[in-house]
Length: 390
Image 1 (cartoon, rainbow, N blue to C red):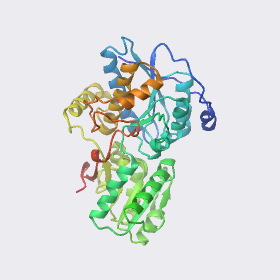
Image 2 (image 1 turned 120 degrees about the horizontal axis):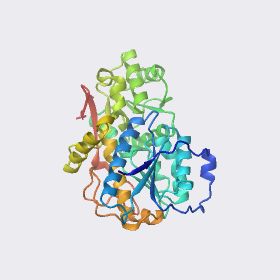
Image 3 (image 1 turned 135 degrees about the vertical axis):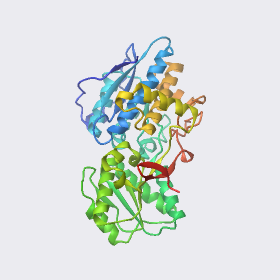
């Protein structure tokens, strides 16, 4: 089995202090191969994080079982960021400066990712983002000659475009916007405003903002109802999405609405129940049976992690499995040198056994997004199941 170490304590370094650490720090990497992992194992996106962890662990176990890097096994150093950006900063800082990892996989949450990418870029450590979708996770450093951030997830621009295409097909004229107050929610708002403008459309009324821990959205929804909106785009994680659905029921609103892939999370169904979330639309990019590799992965996760719920979040697990395999494949080719790993990721052109829909060459020097517009679709909840919206 893979050596997996979960430190009991995290380095207490504030966000400002962490980002201020000089780019000249060059830790002496440990003799044992180490990959850092920062995930939301508790908090608002813990179901994403727990699914992600299974995919990362399985990929690493398989790599080590096949001989590792020149007979040397990879060790995972796993931290829980509690779905808190500041905690993610502490974790990533420690992974680099104390644990001396050669690459990092994570986080599971966009708000956390937006807080840690500056550290990885400055310290020149490859950061493979398996789940978060905010556009600026990749966009912030996309024009840098050496970009250290990579992603295996559909970004919010692509996901929002699916919703806008649906609006155009249905000839919907009055569209409302709601988003949470986090960095991810604000990024989603900006993305939606830009893409609506590009499509020759505009939102009706002002965007409505809510806190991700709010339990009553009736005030915001009442404003959209009074504006006679015919469709609502939201940027909400599963717990807040459930509150949107419940608040709509309180108001007797039947307005169709959609969100990004946060609303395909198991917690959305678990917390809301199938009656509450019936008819809600969300973007997805993966099913466990879309290719043979995906079927095999699903069966493995169901068997190996039976006591943890099996393959309860297939998208999160699959994207993280491929994300980890990409990092491990790069290490297998060039060893534990962060800059060589970065270069190897850009040059990978033989990833033909992906479980997701990425191509054999997921990345290039100009593109660090492994999944594109041809890898997802808009789905709708029907009787506790997701089906294509059309």
